Each structure stands twice: as structure tokens, then as C-alpha cells.
Length: 116
Figure 1 (cartoon, one colour):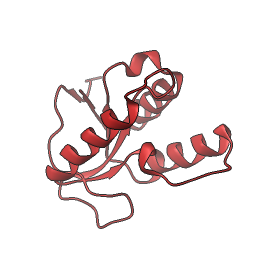
Figure 2 (cartoon, rainbow, N blue to C red):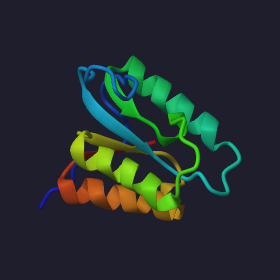
Figure 3 (cartoon, rainbow, N blue to C red):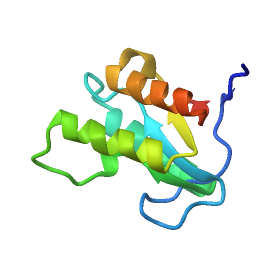
């Protein structure tokens, strides 16, 4: 079994819900809890991926309130399983239980996995 990984993303990112980017659909995963700069990290990654031609789903760009953690995981993992062709792992992802779960689902599905 060969690993589908790369160190840098290939292609551009676009906002979730828009036409699929030329490179495909990519989910941005990384540490949120305990990371005071998480919003900037996610926003910068999403902006760069969009410039490269990706359709991007970044959980920090969602405007959702009054939702449980279980419901949020359902939304995020649902997008990964139904829409994503790749996942982009931000630095420190291995220290986030949520990002580890997202990585595991992407790996199980054979999605392309890119690392910051």
C-alpha cells in the first residue's frame, strides 16, 4: 500500500459552497483548542489554497452558533466524506484529537493528504 502524501499543497482553494476549484476540494485541519493563533493559521492556509485553485472548507470560516461538539464533528466529517478530494494538515495537527480524527477519515478514504 502506498501513502498518498505531500509536503505542500498543489492547486488553488475556493470558498466552501462555490463551484469546485480546478484542483479539487480540500479540508483544512489543525489544532484549535489551546492555539491562540488558530484563526490566522486557518485563514492564511485557506487563502493560499484558494489562490492555488482549490475549493476550501475551513471550520474556522463557519458562522454557526448553538451547536454541540458532536454536531460540529458531524458537519466537518460529513464534508470530508462527501466532498473532499484532499485534506491539508496544519502544523501541530498531531496534537489535536479532532484533527487526528479528520486525518484518519481522510486516510481511510484514500484522500490526498498534504502537510504544512
